[in-house]
Image (cartoon, rainbow, N blue to C red):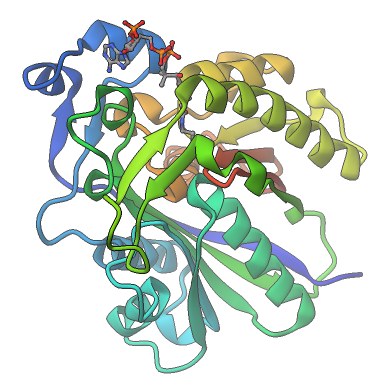
Length: 321
Ligand code: COA
């Protein structure tokens, strides 16, 4: 039997500062009603001056390690999905290694925008299966408040900051729980639908997030639906087998669309977008952390995760808890 990857630890971190829709409406031509009806978002957490992808990711990692009953000495690899690293290098993952006091193992960042956590989870699973790592910290950490254009009401209202982490742990013991499969996709020909105009390699550009909202919406519904089918078909499972949908939290209408396709009642879909907004690569691990800690996700449950982001990138992961 192939080595399995168990999800054994969960942690999240949200900056203290909460910005409501009304607060945004006081400085932008928008309204709480417009934002809530179009997106489901009521508020978002925004990083303070000392919150960075490294500091937030390290805190989420500490909480995930504590949940798992492990210490940083037990970790072989740190993989961080982020589009908002503190520096071009060292990687956020390596900075987090240092924050955790890790001298062993390796770390690197992975750029897949809002699909970053699914891509990182898949990568960690491959390291575990190949025997290159036993315990892996998989982190999504993002400060989109530093890349959105705060004068563009079409994008800035959608995003928030935060970090989430999962400890993935390999086992050779027979059993049915763990990550069953992951499915990754990207299509660079749609890269101009959602992108950041600039980075350290292009300082001549503004470095702000740009989006064709309607096109992204259309792609999200179609691609996430096919991604969900792909995951279930790969495991010979059906919609009715899914206990929980833990989707990337971009927009409640996209989330509900996929939930409906699965024929899942709303109370079986984990939603945080109302309070967190879109935290990109952090959104799925933050949602997992919440639903595991409050007892919604139970041992034996089949959990389907899916995400789509700039690239375009998209994918899904299926896990038995
Ligand atoms: N407040 C008030 N009005 C706003 C607004 C805001 N925050 N943002 C845009 N508008 C206006 C637009 O200017 C436009 O006005 P106009 O008709 O006078 O030009 C109108 O609302 C409709 O804009 P449009 O962009 O067509 O709205 P929409 O119904 O497509 O909703 C999104 C916009 C962004 C909510 C929607 O397209 C969406 O959710 N897309 C997916 C985005 C996403 O999830 N991205 C991340 C993926 S990881």
